[in-house]
Length: 480
Ligand SMILES: Cc1ncc(COP(=O)(O)O)c(C=O)c1O
Image (cartoon, rainbow, N blue to C red):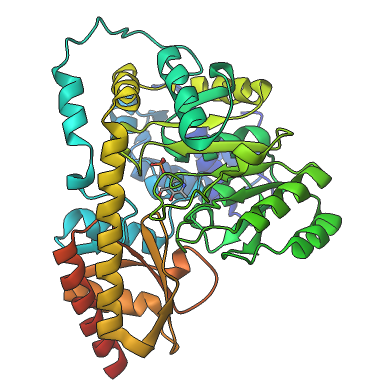
């Protein structure tokens, strides 16, 4: 045993010796039946009291790692593999040590409550099942399905699907691109993650809107990015703030959800969209445009041009998905950008998951090619608009002057401010007791007193009942 305990360490010497032997057993240096030196011999070798070795050996014996037999010395346990198998790893230590951060506790709580309890759900940002395009799915799945390819697909995603998405983007979002500049991802979420993992490094400065969906994602923090927050509202993208910040901090990327933003529901004005694009071109800062909602406008006006459709220089990486317009369970999203960037992201996606399911890509391709998709979208928008109207009329009826909000002209979220000081997390607890759940503003932004109400996940009747329950919770909260 060449090793020696370190007398300058705070850890007691007996512990160091015990750990050294235990590590040796775990890494195979000392095998079963290996005779350990006598207590006296080891004490003299390490220049410590014999009692120190006695304590170290006693600790190892208590763990079942060594056997001490009177007259025949000390050996590594014969049944060590049986014993080591039975030793339970300190899972909590592993759970806490990982570099990838968990969701914040309130979000975990909302996820748990919405899956385990029968609450009226105004919290989850998704469509209710009756809004999914069931008719189209049924038609598609009853077709004579061609022999599907069940091997690993192309690294960028299925070629037919990419060609279809390219046509869809051209026709409905005014975006001109090619199948080689588009990567199919597992929802918009994976596209955001790939951008963060592949194009940024720890310490890089990024800007996200406050409040925003990105604000709620711990993946920015896990990646060690320095996040700065941009006040998000219809007209509040402040170019001076960005210019000053860039001069001081060198912004690496700006993450925006300009159309029917989650959670404010607001549409960034055309003037501001142009302004931010020109700022991006002036400084060469890429914009990541996250756009799950632009096809869900309630207005007849054609005022939802994406930044990507206005981007003549190639400064925007464009992300979208089928989650909000069709069904999130397909997990089909995409990202559009320069070929070299897309290839880099595709290479990482291969390492993460070897590409997307061929079955779900086939269904998505049929869905996007269906003549009925836009008929479904009209139905969806009409339903969402009705639910938004019910939500607003109930909010006005119950809460009146207690709250303020802007009416969303598309998408699925309404951002509501309480005029009095409230603690949204306490209100949430009270609401869960009353049988309704919402997203507290603190999960999505820095300002106090906001809540996000999603009107897509519950039907009109549930929304009516949900707001009544929310009001009861608010009254109880005020009375305490
Ligand atoms: C703005 C925004 N981006 C991205 C996502 C992720 O959606 P998905 O991964 O299902 O496409 C959401 C989901 O709510 C969202 O609101």
